[in-house]
Image (cartoon, rainbow, N blue to C red; front, side, top):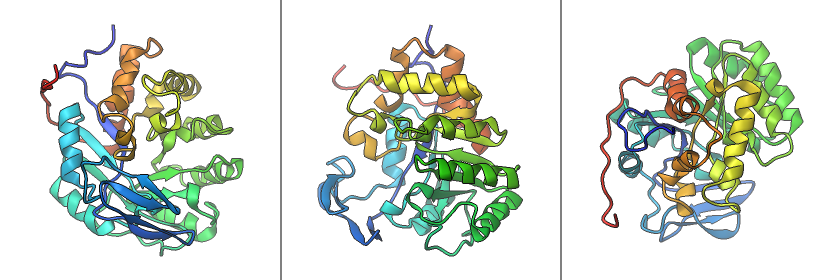
Length: 303
């Protein structure tokens, strides 16, 4: 029997979300910026970046927490991406205001940023899938060693590229105590995704599923191939090394926030214990979340 979705006993933590006050940045020479009605100019194309009721494009902590409360998600990890611009100033304030519900990561663009850690963060996000600099470059390796020394968690997304995977293997060897979360479930629709997953055979490396519903969007709810990928990864490295992530808010343009995890209850491929670990238990231990609120089920008007 699957865990009872209406039960107060199920701990849910989202290991991959994004926040910003405004998108206004340049990536590869292209201007990415907020537009009205939840849209953004994205690499020369107008895209629905957030839900259309977010008319000013502000993707705030308060909106995320409201969604979390509705979907009964106790805690969330806020990572960053270069396409949203650096949100360190905002997220430092968010971390100070919501220390029990949110775990915020500073952004480091290893191609362009000075590799000095801002104060007030317990994690750093490195979107390496957009980087040209090698992960085992001496300066980058020194930065990773400093994260290890200070007990800072590294959240990293990798290209579907065996070269980056081999570079990460060197990072893991050189920084054996550095806690690493690999994002986007190793780009599960890519050619080399299981090689990314196998990085989690090292004791301090975990895999989070941020964006897995986006990767299988053409299949749509209840995403049977996404569940199959989670099953395959669990068979490779064990369910204890895997964490659920939504990639909020971009994914809720296609599905609701609650749908970004409740599709897992529609499949027989994961046991009760595996779901409990994947949806929150593993992330609670990895990120060091303390007690989280018991969130009541709120009945919809349409029910």
